[in-house]
Image (tube, rainbow, N blue to C red; front, side, top):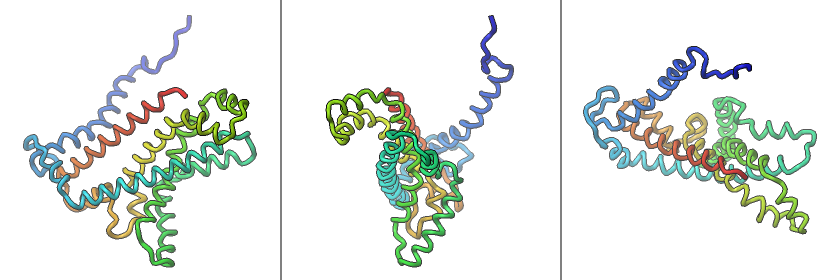
Length: 266
């Protein structure tokens, strides 16, 4: 009987896997450890302390940047999820037709184009609009984040719809339910895990974004990631490690919930 091929049994696989794991997570572990350093160095350990977490918590600039980041991420994720849900319904609950593949590509365009290209394009367009209107408020950041987050919300929602059993929807139609009632009472309850997963993914993407924010923002519109970038250009203290550690915990929590929700069968 022929032996089943398994890459895990190949010579050197374990070593390469452990090396990749080590190279990926050692810098993250170092960052987290030095967030608890009592001294000002990010390279010399001087003792355990929550000093830099307290410093970050009491820093007014960090407070304002954090609130702005949460507001932008919540707004962008909410609008992006609504748009993505409608787009997913329009592209999955229809018979194939010419141009459907183009619509898939159009919706997922921010995933295929380098983020720096999208950021430069937004900078050029918004710069002209600012000149014409004289307005330089936060609406540009909200629009940019929303547009960028739509495909990230779209993918889990579309995947959920494609894996759903259509039997219940057809049964509702056979029982003379209107399309709206069938959607509200049958499709939407089954789709909720995908919608929540899409929202969480869009929220994390917006919260962590640096490139688009750096290009689009105006004066006084620092978000937490751009604040951290600015601080790294001046002086590096464990306060940055503390902020990054909180970011890491938030991201891990959201990603964990994303996978738990996506494991539920429709």
